[in-house]
Length: 136
Image (cartoon, rainbow, N blue to C red; front, side, top):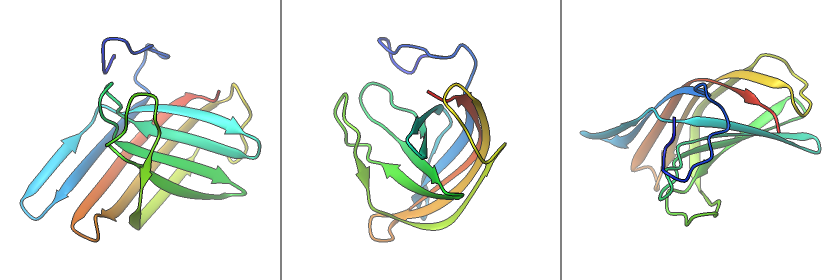
């Protein structure tokens, strides 16, 4: 599935089955067009769950190291080729991976359940679902 015309499709199968709900009070948006990419950089595994469509980005970057992880939220106000994050306050986060040690070219399967507050507590972001990909 291509999210924009010039996108290079790395996998012919869907790499993420994630639903995100964002909003506050009576106004909520739902996104379900996520893709997963993973890279091994030294001792850190970076898992990107993103739905960049050529114009805006939405999703999270999970960094896993020493049996710990932390989540960074992508800033949707990015230009092509940029990677920006914004401050958020995690309220709840669970990450389950199929194994604890990965190398480049391994397949990775996982589950994320993540909830955070954005914008000084005015917006909520909830993400939940499964992902799979090959580690670059």
